[in-house]
Amino acid sequence: MRIDIISVVPNLLESPFSASILKRAIDKGLVEIHLHNLRDYTSNSYKQVDDYQFGGGAGMVLMIEPIDKCISQLKSEREYDEIIYMTPDGEQMKQGLVNTLSLKKNLIILCGHYKGVDERVREQFITKEISIGDYVLSGGELGAAVLCDSIIRLIPGVLGNETSALTDSFQDQLLAPPIYTRPAEYKGWKVPEVLTSGNFTKIEDWRDEQSYQRTKTRRPDLLDEE
Ligand code: ADE
Image (spheres, helix red, strand yellow):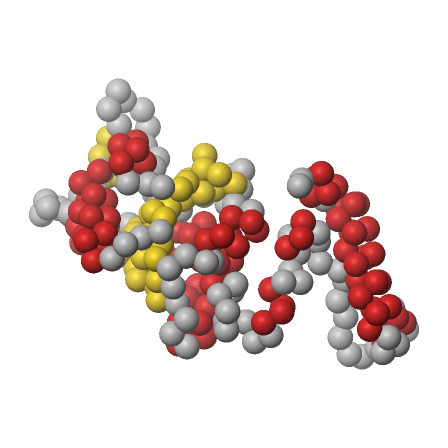
């Protein structure tokens, strides 16, 4: 998979990809991340990427020209499955959407900044708009990092144990069950006995029940979704 990320502050996106699972995925060649600084696509000597809103109002708006130049250049080099815009008024990111995106080959992610982008960018270039939650960030970069992390960990070979992504919370619309590790007893606090019983059928039944109960108390809305 290849992900091209367009931003006015691409250095905000350097550290998420420079450690742990995401770095390993890149080092193994399972994903390529290409960061593009929008200022490199300006035609004016001030490298201006934003301007005032028509009609007045506070806040600057990212201009269409540098975004057009950047996206058009990328599209001339390869085909993209989706051109995503990170925005608080987009579709709320859920595991199902992440699963779908993890199967794609080439993605572009455009990060908004300041007030956002000229609406014509959304109309002309964007195929999917994604929000990471009902709150406003100062730009789309952190949202893009969240989106990339959730996608990349699903690519086969990225996680050590292939099955571990399947038991995440939200796969199957259920929260994950509680987990424990050694020691089996700490300061008198014990791990549930069933987990050390060696009876894998019972362990699976216990986990399923815990998942269900946890979902019912914490996120009953998930049980209502089909
Ligand atoms: N940019 C600003 N706020 C955002 C959000 N909640 N999700 C995605 N991109 C954003």
